[in-house]
Length: 245
Image 1 (cartoon, rainbow, N blue to C red):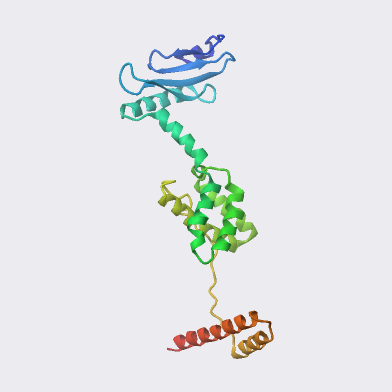
Image 2: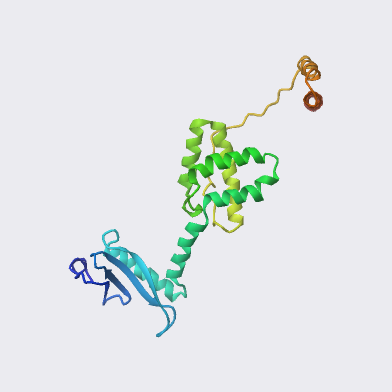
């Protein structure tokens, strides 16, 4: 089979397959509309067993050397006991089943709902992940996609992009743990944002002002603020004693 031979294949009233004599099982299907498609036929076991068809791709988009190389890989996989056509079907099925929006919502129910900052993380996942990748399969998401999304959110808010990256790393690790994907596309991606720790505590005068204001607030909010103020005062004294020691 040569390029010239493929170019000159006749177009019939129904599908016709022309086989390559040099590579048995490899051929070109020509449709009544003149479309030419490379394909491979093989048997699951020995003679008389079920035939399987593997479509390589259309002639033009796939060159003859590319198609022959792919056909040889398929035959080699068959010799190893694999079924390339079934593997291809399962791969396509995964692209439909493992959608980002479905996985994110499951992640929210099974993981995020159990932690204290669940509302903030849930909003972040729905706003920045589902909104951008929702209908995609997780198997389509590559490292570049993660980096691009982090950069996009970073243009809006550097801290938000930092939190999103941390959340995505947790989400993808969760997916790996569930055997949805083999590795996380977020691993190896770092953020230039650095969170600044807040060491400052309120002075006695500031705390007193907060407590006085809290006692003028209606219940129960005033008591909550007063309690938090006293808690902050205790924490600040402990921190100062620790530094002094």
